[in-house]
Image (tube, rainbow, N blue to C red; front, side, top):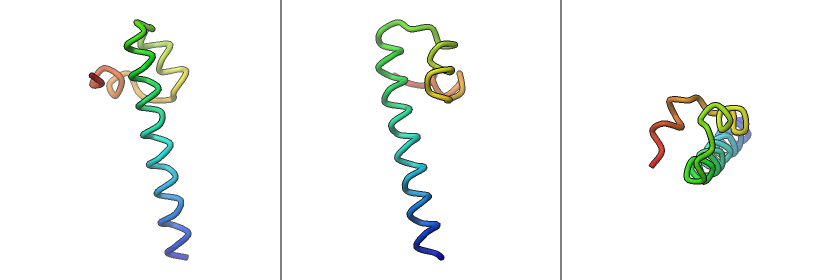
Length: 51
């Protein structure tokens, strides 16, 4: 059971990292933050922090 939880946690972290990478690319393409929120599921605050 512990192994299953650890595996799911790793997958969730990977999904979030991927969403952040995509959000950064979209932000660098001058896409509106509201559109990035919809596309990635991240919060506007998370997107604003990206550099």
